[in-house]
Length: 201
Image 1 (cartoon, one colour):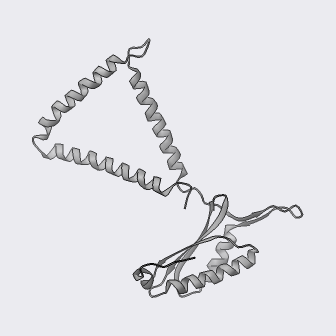
Image 2 (image 1 turned 45 degrees about the vertical axis):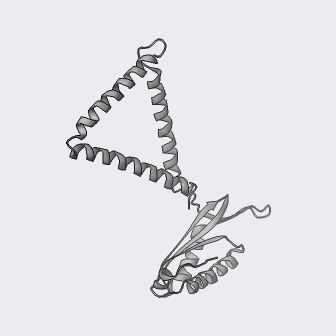
Image 3 (image 1 turned 120 degrees about the vertical axis):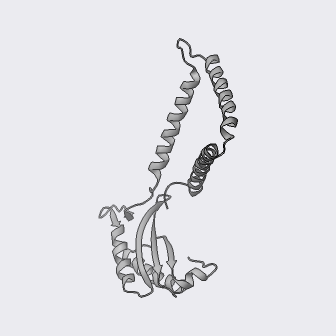
């Protein structure tokens, strides 16, 4: 869960992987096949001739270089900026506050995610059904959403695990005086793996 579109992430990773795969395959073919060099040499010479002709036909006014070089540098700079912005956005979306209500009488009420983490960890730590649990919070459409991840032991029913977590979540809602939206993620457990689908709410 973060502020970056999942489809955009996968598209960028796939495109980068295919590009690197194509470069690697071309290098391998050029190194292993004896006739690859003879085939590549006239192609590279033709490309070099065309590029040189383009640069000579597009001189920058008052300079001895082509404006295509300036356009290329501009494209590279913009690409670097976009990639940096994309990389810096990764992992964002986390929040440390699950409740922030402003009241005119006693001032704002702020509850940190550590309160929910401590309450749920204490409640679920003693359960034999779970190997480990973790609690975090994310800001989704300007609203805090609690994410509870639990690793089930082998043979634990997903339905039973959901019921246990939901019971503790209802107790947390009563403690906070507010019902929080929750994403529950269950992993592990033999029965959880062999089932075709499990609908969680």
